[in-house]
Length: 193
Image (cartoon, rainbow, N blue to C red; front, top):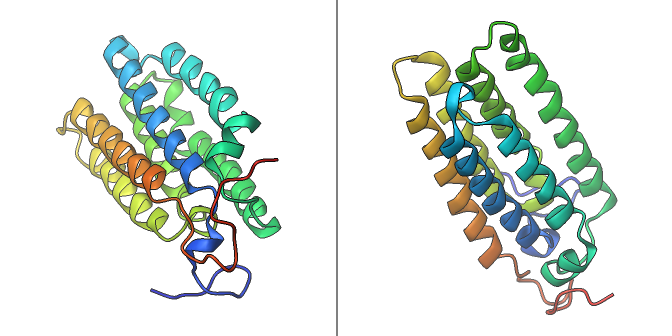
């Protein structure tokens, strides 16, 4: 794998200081998808349950500065912030393009698989924010979604459980391995400001 980062530096664990926040977010999203799947019904993953849980996660995890200070080992670079913004915009654009057209015929399988695919793709640029493990996460999520899109005989629940499982495993991994290795570049303790 190429060792270049956006800044022209090398892939270095000290460059990915917010992996624990990402890990907690992935765990939360896996729980929210599971809750929506359990509520299910015609929508397969009940959208109000998913949407409510997603919004709680945004405010409780991503916008929670106190939690971010506890979990982060430093501030992202300007390049990482730009890539983060790009990846989120990319995700929403792809969701509209891939899954959006299926709202007209209420094909919730294709709506959700389109969302899973868009989310998987959006993890590719996240590698510059949270490290090369995002490439592996992206490949697994994209493969799961494409498998469901290409073979309608595969149970949606099986595909959703696979998506949940991948997010949960990577979330735990990122939460537990987020500490930077390069002690010269960054402090050993989380931010306290």
